[in-house]
Length: 300
Image (cartoon, rainbow, N blue to C red; front, side, top):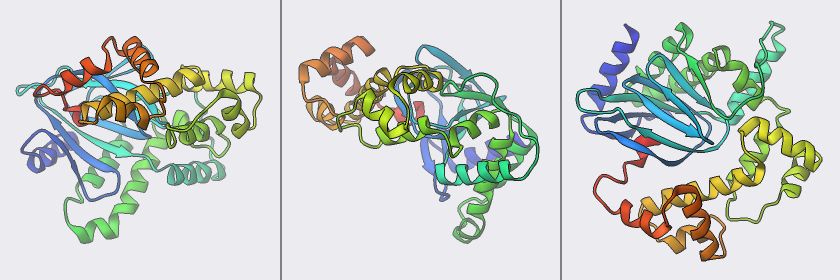
């Protein structure tokens, strides 16, 4: 019943496809009634909850297909491919995107650890993304958050508390152990990813990343790959190229996008771009100019 109410709220607020801000920092509603194939995107720390329809995300070849029975938890910045391949007018996609504030998530994770209660640990190494089944705590917290509507006073007074409640539901839920590992105070890999993601145009090396994480090169490489499925250099390259692809699809020139993500050599950028995406940057730019090719906000 609560999911039906969530869908009604999104339908009422969104007469057209796209994404809209709710007024609560980091919380957006989205709708899609047209299929969008998977395309390069970058997920910042977030939870994506599908209320109706289905969505698809690919991380390093691993495909995650989810609908209203599961939500996606991505606690660290990740280069992915994402799309809405099953969306249609008959089967519309409705959902909620919630950005995860690392500071608040870390505070909650620490408070949970300090409570003295037995908290399950993550099973196996984290793999960048995790799907989790909706439970009553998550559903109730999400509904209470979205029900704040567009009333500025309600949002100002209650928004922070209800967002905190939603975060807590995630940390207690099926992906909770995985998220707590990422946001725990000792997670040097998450800090390294945040640092690299915020300065993609700067030179980077494994030695530099390992040094800032306080690890040897070998240990850092092993732990990084456990956490993300990718080697550090593969991760940085994917982040740069995915960001560039999004910038080009958004109208930036190929040369501007290459420089913006740290490529000094246009030929190297073109070569690595084509190797990853199967198209040259110019072909990608031409495809992006066609009607309907830039619905990346919905797809991602």
